[in-house]
Image (cartoon, rainbow, N blue to C red):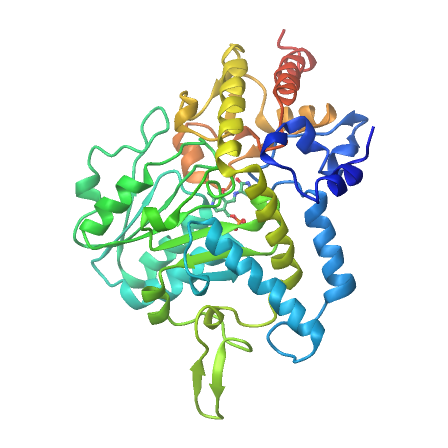
Length: 427
Ligand code: 7TS
C-alpha cells in the first residue's frame, strides 16, 4: 500500500473530484495514522476545529524553511515571496466566497475577531440609543457577546429572532423584529449546535428593505456549503481558517468596500498606516487599514493550500457527502431510544453538527467514555449557553462531521453509545 505522502505526490498534492471518497481523503491526513487509547482515531469534532491535510502541513513547513520573511516591508526576494504568498491567499479567499474584490477581504485572527471588528468599528460609529440590533437565539457567543456589549455601550435594544421547537428560525414575526429602527442583523448561516441552515437570503432581503446592514457568521457554513456572498448581498461575512482544513490563528472578515472604506480601524500600529507624523496619522488603504502588526503569514500561505484542497474536491460535492452522512447519522441515532437529538430532523435543512443527549448519562461522562474508544466528540454548551438553556439542558454531546468522515465512523459512534449504556449500567 502506498503512503499518503506517495499518493499525494501522485496527485500533485491534491485530490480530484472523482476521488471524493472519505476513506481515500483520510489518507491525506496524518492524524488518522495515530491511535487514541489503543484505538484508531474517529474524529467527530470538526465543528470545533478540523484536521489538517498533509498539503497544508507541508506548506507551513516550506514557508518557514525556505520563504520566511516579513510581508510588505522588504525589497529582498524572501520578503517579496512571503508577500506574494500572503496576498495570493487573499485573492483565493475572494474567489472562494463568490468573486468579491481582494480589498474587501481582511485577514483577522479568527471569526470572533472579525465580528468584533464590525461591532466595534461599524457599530460604535453607526448605532445609537433607541436603535435595534437583531441577532438570533442560536448564536455562538462570538456573535452574541459583541452585540450585547454594543447595545450596552450605545443604549440600542438587542432583539432576538426566536427558534421553533424543531430548531428552525421562527420567522412568523420577522417584520416586527426587524423594523425601521434596526441598524444591523447579525446571524449565523449554520448553527454549531443544532446544525440548522438558516434562510439567510430571505433575512438579508428583509433587513435591506428596512435599511439594516447584515453580518453573516459563516464560521460553520463556509467550510461546508458553497457560499456566494456576492449573490447573497450580505454586507459582512466572518469565518475561520481552522474550521476548513487551515491553521489556527487566521480568519477572515469580508465587508463591502463602501462600508469598509468608511470604517475606522480598531487596532493601531505598523502596516495599517500610510503616513505618520508626531502629531497626526493617515490610515493605509484597504484591506491593510485593518491589519495592524505582523500577520499570520505562514497561516495565510497554508490557508491557501486548504482552500485549494477544498476547491479540488468541490464545495457541492462536500455538501452532498455531508448531507448523506448527516442523514445516515440522524437515522442511526433515531434508532437509539435513549438518545434525543436536537435540531432539524430533515437533513436538507441542516449540516453535520449533531448535538444530542442520553436520557441518563451526563454529556461529559459520555464524551469521556467515547474517548476511551478513540471517538472524539465534544460535550458542553458549545459556546452557545443561552441556546443550550433554551433546549432545557445544561449541556449536550455533539458529534460533527467533515470530508474525512465515513459511515463507519457513525457506526462506531452508535455502537459506542450502546456500550456506554452497559458501562454505566443502564441496561
Ligand atoms: N461562530 C460559530 C457559528 C462557531 O461555531 C464558532 C466556533 C465561532 C463563531 C467562533 O469561531 P472562532 O474560530 O473565532 O473560535 N465554534 C466552535 C464550536 O462549536 N466548538 O468550538 C468552537
